[in-house]
Length: 596
Image 1 (cartoon, rainbow, N blue to C red):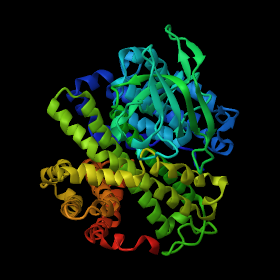
Image 2 (tube, rainbow, N blue to C red):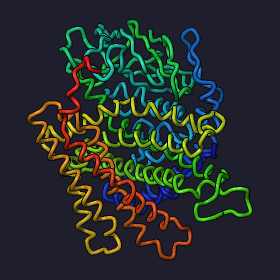
Image 3 (tube, rainbow, N blue to C red):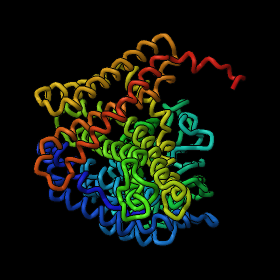
């Protein structure tokens, strides 16, 4: 496997040139207080070094050893504790945390880039700080001042970890039927009893304490999702002075033996009259959880991007080195026994597909992060409302489209390797196994598609969609006088029209057929994703066209060539997706159950 190399040049291109974060931060004083461009560069440079030198070397060994469970004790693979100690020494757990409690307060546009590098180097390792960050986000927004002061500093420091405990054996996506109970106590705490499964980082040996955020129901709670509350339940109780006290009644019953991410502990966590404290309001637990869902779902999308980037790097190195056959146009390396396989059109097809989708994914993750930052930092109510609406619309696309394409890219990388991609020696097969979970957790991609089409599009009759469509249309219109850009703007505009047609069609069909949304939603999310990526590539091409002349590095030239490939070879997929959506739900629902 190729040694991981952080794609810093592309990250800086997006931040500085495409999205112009200096100008953005100037318009958001609270963001400008937190970071400047020099600080951002330094953070990214250091994150790249840590990812390459600290996390990448323990990626394969972590997969081979996996986490171990022995009589309730979970241990991580060799090297993980030492790497984690170095990681938290650099303050990385608190990168985007609230400065009032010891966090660094960095914008998500920086955090997204750092997350990508960490996940590219070692997805299993990256899940531990990712879960802590999610728990901190929910606590910072909804917990009492007392709880925040007691727990957040240690969590931002990384000395304590966080975990989100939602799923139960009988209750996955339908959280309204959870059975975990929380009984009020005289001292203001709650006694929490129940069992949770599939809990990422639910137990491990990296930190001295783990702070569980647990969904549970009070004895008199309303039925369904309206009766869910959120509770903070520490693995080890914390004394009034902040020191650790007695062990809480929180145990790990087992860990899962998984297809991938084997160095990440996926646990059954049992609560047996465990002591906990309410976070937020009674029966408002889902609202507390959804505070962090947009960040976490973007984070999972970034996992897909991260695996795709790593796959591309691996495949390119192999394709340049592996000698097989001769170029169709004649020997490219006549002094060698055969030509490197990168001369073959089919290898280039796979590499360019991977590159175009990976760089499109990186741009799109930054685009969503931009709106998260605006919603967080702006003092303008209308601007915040717009940004929050865009985040709501784009989040399911970021989670599902980036992870679907991420798996595709790892499989393409495996195909470039041929038989060597199927064996453990080269490490490519681990990427395929590791990234597969990203399509499943944090809400399966099918549920993301239903959320997009049902809640974000049909429920408001396309009003949220119009925000995105109008932004893209404004971009096209504002560049009408740029003749060089028309080669990108014309297909972008045509694909946006197809997306608008699909939107109108499904909204119309849904009024008469309850199955219309479910039948169309996955194809619709893909259609939306390809159009959104066309917008990302048009923005990148706009910058590259201005700077390509005189650029000796070839960076901007490569950008333009990859953009042209995206528009000519990938964007046409939107035509078939529209036709599939227009076919409606009838054929999908025609087969009787007993005919399956």
